[in-house]
Each structure stands twice: as structure tokens, then as C-alpha cells.
Amino acid sequence: MKRTTVVLSIVLAAVALAALMLSMASAAPSAPASRVEFTKKTSDTTPRVGEVFTFTLRFCNVSTQTLEVRVADRNPAPLYLVIITPTTGYSAAIDSVVWTGLLTGTSVISPTPVVTVTYQVQVTGIPTTALASGHVVTNTAEMVDMKTPGSLPETTAEVAIRIMPLRIFLPLVCRNYSS
Image (tube, rainbow, N blue to C red; front, side):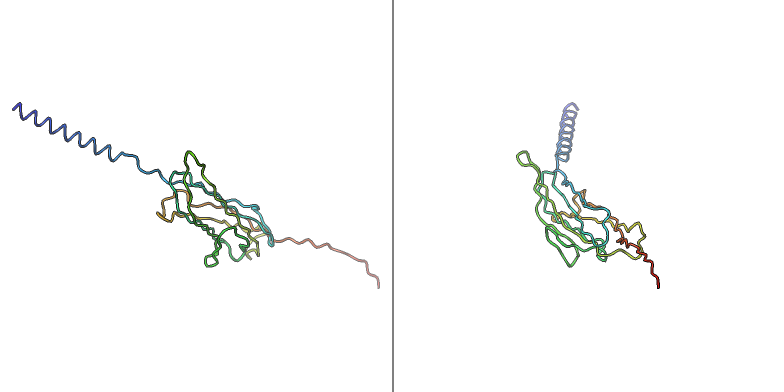
């Protein structure tokens, strides 16, 4: 009986040790989550018909992994806005400014590079349903990890603009005519 108790104790200790090793293996650190900083700004939040303004996208990888990403900034109102000078690729098929490339991760010896994409847009018209206070258009840029889509937690950056109607002031000239 004593011998059975000793063998049973050894078996229980082995099972406990195996369970401990399994829990330590599953708690091993996994690869850090990918994280990017992604912002979008405009040079003018209330452009008027005929005016040109600038959209600027800035993004950087703040994780340690290198990411292969695609950023697409679609024209939100093709009837009212025209993309005129992108500093990166323009896709007429989807009416978007597109940037594709590698975002290197942070390290002790090299700081994270920031990618800046700037392009100009011209306001060509205003919706007929707009009121005198203007028409709000929200422009959203999207980022996708090309190797594992859906893996980036911050994938959009947006800015709202209000397209203002063109105002023309005509002087009223009254002349005194006598016949």
C-alpha cells in the first residue's frame, strides 16, 4: 500500500508538472500587435466653389514589425471635387489617391519614418440641395495590411469639409437719367 501511495504521488506530481509546462508554453509572449498612427488634415475646412485646397495624410508604424500596407483615399464627392495634384499614385478607376509600400517598425537605433502624402483638390460645384451654409463632405482614407487584412486596429483617418457656395457681390449702380 505504501508503495502504491508513492507511485500515485509520483504520477500526480508528473501530471502537475506537465500541466504547469503546458500553461507556461501557452502564456509565452506572442508577436506584438501591429499599430500605426494615421491622421488626415486639410488646409481649408470651408472651401468655396472654384478654390483649391490640400489634403495631407500622415502615417507611421509604431510597432516593431515591418508592415506592407496600402492606403487609399477615395474622392468622397466626385461631382463636386476634383483631385488635381497627388504626390503619389492616382487611380482613375477608383478616383483615389493610392500609396502602397513598406512601413518599417520602430527600433532602438532608428526612429520610425513618417510617410506624408499630400494632394490638392479643387471644388468644382456644390450640390443643388445645399443650403447657404454649405454642404458637409466627409473624406475618409483607409489603410489595409496587404499580408493580413483586418490586422491593423487603426485603419481609417478622416476629415470633414463644408463646401461653401460661391458668393459674388455686384455693385448696384444707379444713374439719374433725364430725357
